[in-house]
Image 1 (cartoon, rainbow, N blue to C red):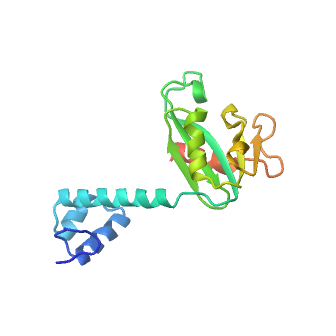
Image 2: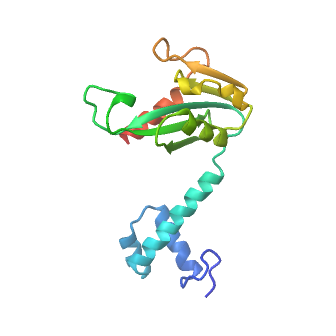
Length: 179
């Protein structure tokens, strides 16, 4: 029994394709086990391998081509206690990038310092892109990294001026917080 998708597997290609179909339809491991006649532990291992492979493919293809890229940091969770954003305790910082009209990249970070965020930006955004960001101080000097232009959005004054905004990324962040 040869399986071109799984090396050293004792599952036929036909069974593997069936398991992959159930994975794509978001059917849980117990139900998939009953439908395929394969143990739940084996199904769990296969589902984990599939998830790892999906993450690897996404990370390989996640560099943004030259274009307009919005960048922003957000904070998820934590107790509010009359404080918002960075000040609230227990928040998880998340950094996000959005290529307008294309795709979003997010990453949980340990903090939102320049030393943490700039390598992510340099790794994911192509040089020559136009960067739009909030007025956060860490984005100072981003043009020195090889980006064409950098526009700051002053959210307290006016949210949209001409094409100078990060609305798409803010909407994505708010959707993710409440999803």
